Length: 136
Ligand SMILES: Cc1cc2nc3c(=O)[nH]c(=O)nc-3n(C[C@H](O)[C@H](O)[C@H](O)COP(=O)(O)O)c2cc1C
Image 1 (cartoon, protein in one colour):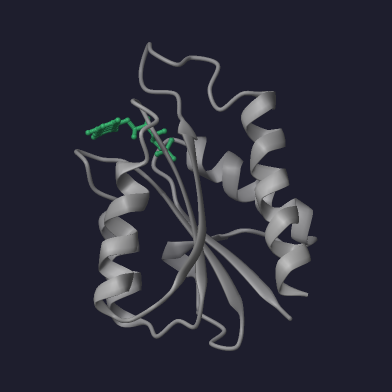
Image 2: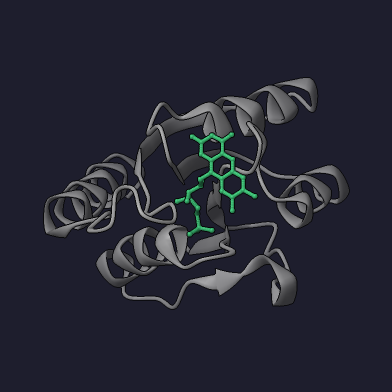
């Protein structure tokens, strides 16, 4: 099976998670701004949380593409996964199954200055590895 990791990241925290997942899959993560969906791929979609919502480009990307199964990831100041929840709602409305999800805190101005940290990166890699083992 082939995979894609596609992210929206304004400040780099979500990109760190995307890169961790992609490195586990031995591929490069793709910025949603330049990404073209391979519709045979299993796709990891990720975004930061901006006012409770994923990035606009990610919302548009989900709107404009047809997916098989996806896994979601996100980062936010609160670390509660609202951005993932919103992406999941949008995908459910398109009848897309969300197989799994990962979220953690991201750096937000002066708060969470060290996030995502090594532990988050390890957890993100575990998340990718777990899915890889299920999907192979
Ligand atoms: C404009 C803006 C709005 C944000 N709104 C929220 C929010 O509503 N809730 C939250 O938990 N974090 C919020 N954050 C924090 C980001 O979700 C957090 O910094 C995240 O890690 C950003 O991901 P990125 O570095 O990949 O862009 C906001 C950040 C920005 C820049």
